[in-house]
Amino acid sequence: MPPDTPPHVRAGLELRNVSKYYGDLAALMGAQLRVGPGESILLYGPNGAGKTTLLRLLATLARPSEGEIVFEGRDIRQHAAAAKAAIGFVSHSTFLYGDLTVRENLEFFGTLFALPEPEKKIAAALELFTLGSRVHTPVRKLSRGLQQRVSLARALLHEPTFLLLDEPFTGLDAATVAALETLMRRLPDTGRTVVFSTHDFERGAALARRLVTLEAGRIRYDGPVEGRIQESGFRIQESGRQTTQTPQS
Amino acid sequence: MRSLKIISAVLVKDLRLEWRNRETLASVCVFGILVVFLFNFAFEPGREESLRQLPGLLWVAFAFAGVLCFNRSFALERENACLEGMVLAPVDPGLVYLGKMLANLIFLSIAQCVIVFATSLWYNFSFVPSLKWFALITFLCTVGYVAVGTTFGAIAANLHMREVMLPVLQFPVALPIFIAGIEASTGALKGDPPSSYMSWIKLAAGIAVIFVVLSYLLFEYVLEE
Image (cartoon, rainbow over the protein chains, first blue to last red):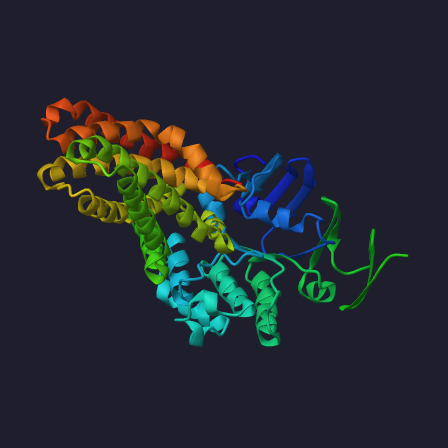
């Protein structure tokens, strides 16, 4: 993309023919994906399909073996700081220190992200995920679901433009799932982008506008959620937002 | 200013974690004291022999105490993949390195004080006459050693058999520091004039600066997957 391309066109994260190998194992092969502003994208596929690898590449936690990742029209490595400031990532790991309290963890990451008015943002994040009563509890003493809530609060602390969520509903109770779903629906309307993976297709399809399916490290489908999509191993039928998922005969 | 904030945030975080569980200091100090005790028990040296053995003994204790310290430092980061959490932030990885290096320097310095105190008791040896020079030599060599140890601690954190790999990787690189430390400490403890071991002190200072700068610059690549 030429350097004089308008910002609204340049804005976005893009994988250009990206492959990722771990030794002999090809975790992702030839991935082409453009993530624009205000999108809501569901990554779907069986275990080992490459969803987590794709998210880690977008989050700058992994370097592609082949191809390039582009952020706002430039190689992401060339302005990694700007890219990282625009990305929030929730992974299987919480990235939280077990012996620090909830507040201490958020303060620490707030400092790393150079938050303006950190107290205000920490308070807002705590309120959003109803963590107010746990502020002074060491993270180690929280349940898995509560730790996931703190992890979500950490990822949203710097109000990222691109929110990357790897299985975000794991361990969450119904109320927190509802709060997260509301947030995930609201964020794209404010120009922010949510890219998430889940094995719960019904829930994911209800939240996303775009579906990317992966299988054996390759992107098999990239398009609107609506419609009938057939993937090897899965047949996904959709009627409005009511979906069923059955093994392919 | 922002750089200082990042360094102090990482440092304070590590100090706070240590204050909460006290695992690093406790294990490092106990290990160091055991080394000193075992050497004393094995050799029962007189004053002359003590002077010959002490610098080597002390640096053996410091070296292995350091291994425990660096392993523990990154064990805390491995839990919940916290190091990746820091990599996600828009900060210069070199600043994260400096914060962790300073924390390790503090922990190892405290352990060294305890080890030296235990040594003076068991060997009935007073460090007071040569304390100024001995402290300077130990500090400079410890800065160099911690600079290397923090970097290799981060590298080993991603390896299987990391507890074994850390000393195997870092000792060859840290060898010049140990040699400078032992040679200069021998002169200082004997009460020789500083000019006779000044070249070793300069070598230790030079190595410390080179290791800190190199590690600061290369830490970005150490953190990459």
